[in-house]
Length: 197
Image (cartoon, rainbow, N blue to C red; front, side, top):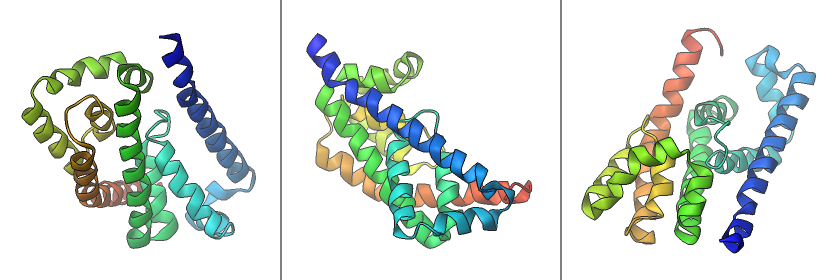
């Protein structure tokens, strides 16, 4: 047990790195007056060139492991920074990679990893779905294809299921594009309508 705990410490370290990276970016952006307008925000990020793309995709991957970094913020940022087409391609690459990694982490480390990444309340809410293999596969597929569903949680839970790696990866890669586009453009439109963007 102690050995497993030590092995899983990297999850805490990853979360800490993600938190520090997020706070650092926000601090620098705030000091530079980046949040005064949408265009200033875009210009500030684009001055980092291709590094901004790498950082953005990294944040999209990390947000699967960082509960304080809502995907609503990151997917909207992708559309604002890179446009609806390219932005959603970056969203897709980052979120799909993060979802697959989330599944593989729990598949590798089991329940101890799940309990580190998901609250007990949410585990209890969805864990019963694992009892029936076919039912869980249908549930997993439906959630991944649905824009507002809690797919982060089911990606973790899939690691405890009997689903093969190939099947999980296939569902994620096929299900994410449409749900990401609807989710990101929905949030962008909503924020635009209420005058935040």
